[in-house]
Length: 69
Image 1: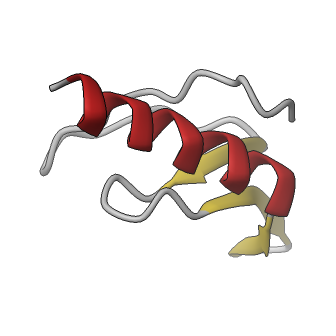
Image 2: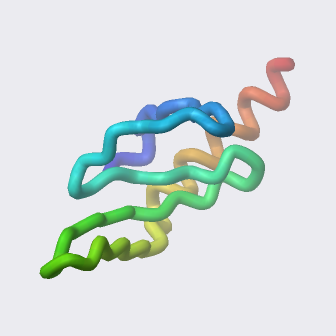
């Protein structure tokens, strides 16, 4: 994931179709996680890993938006 990635704005309570891999960025602090989902047997599993470079890029974008506001 590059530092200049776009993130989808999500709405509370809305359902979203999942792919087997996506990135999740916190709207308040900009921490980005790589999220993977898999079905193993009858169990749905989720794996989250912090993405440092994408977090830096996202936090930079958030800072610019706050300054521009």
